[in-house]
Length: 75
Image: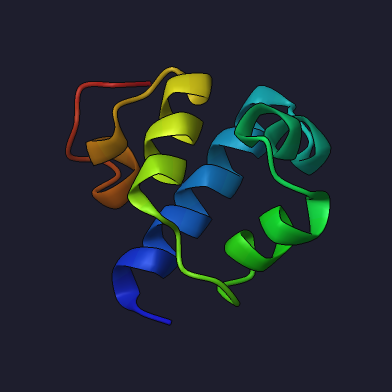
């Protein structure tokens, strides 16, 4: 799919794991089906910017932190 898409997917999954949140929780927060979230996290579908913004807000991190983990000031 692309390096940035893969980075967002890995980073989102890492936050879910760290916070003990399920993919089902994330799908509900995004307003998408569990299959759509699985496609996003599995790099079978490209993240839209509004989805990145929504999941970042839900995870309480900045969207920048999902694209460039380890370079921000967030959790």
